[in-house]
Length: 420
Image (cartoon, rainbow, N blue to C red; front, side, top):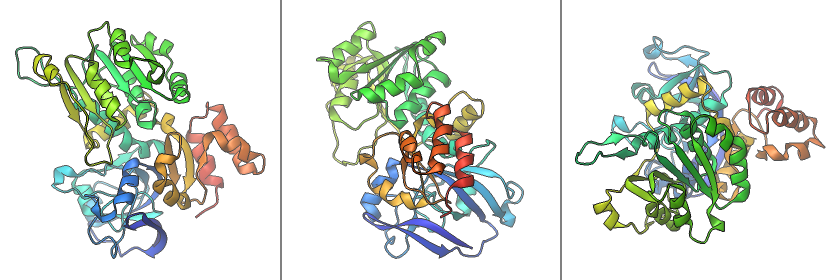
């Protein structure tokens, strides 16, 4: 079978190519990818090429398929896995297989599996790692977003607190505590707000900051403080760019005591130091943002580390249990990761989008891999619809849902878009 895929050959060297997949082995699975969400981690891999720790050294001669936030359907199952999987099943992939003792991951390390492809071969190691997850939802895009959502879930679980006089780490954010999400109105920040409001442990106070007024306004519309208050959570949005002493103001919102948990969503020194300054006793600073600068650093108040027992954690990705929790919360309708999505496109939009991702405003860029379509903002569909009835109908569907991507929009797109 032939596939079309975006492969990496080196630094900033991505190519959309058609090639033949090898014959399926008894321990492999053939699948069709339907959707892939482009991650900043793919942008970093594209910039670093073989220097990236997950990208093979010989990628120049044995290119790998990029994209690791993907979902699709199974086409054919090798004999080894017929007892567990069957043709027609929908699936999501957890690319992090660290517990198998490897940094290799779909979307970085393999020649025949990655999210930015029409068809893939899922190797045995993915199933052995229990990282091929059946998915029962109607739409494909939530399964694509289960991977980034699992990163958020994992970060919440990684935070911890230590009761005074003990050495016992109690994992997770403090139940009923004070939580601050800094620089948190980007796509991952929105997911973190959603999980804080609707996940397992809930804070009593949730403060969300940014310096972009439009993004704060969108977050406030998606997650209104009035609705959060009905669930017993005081939700406050703050533009720290308009405040002379942001740390002092934020501490005042916590009754001066400081915050139990603070998440940092931007690799910016001032934001990290602001997070440190607002920590309360036994406060946990969770550095969520992944920097590209290997020398990135910031000042930490070690007096507070010693006397106020403040501490620092960081996570990179989630695990399979985190992803299962994400899928479960989605299936129960408790979280809606579609709020992350602001752009859609086809497989031929992947290269430019991946290479230029930081310069493209908005949230998540969702790719449907079997269609040809430029990357389009959901807020630009109306303008494009003046000339093209395809975009006009798509705009009407999205507009009816407050410009949030949805099942009806996905079905229309897959049925009417130009095949790749």
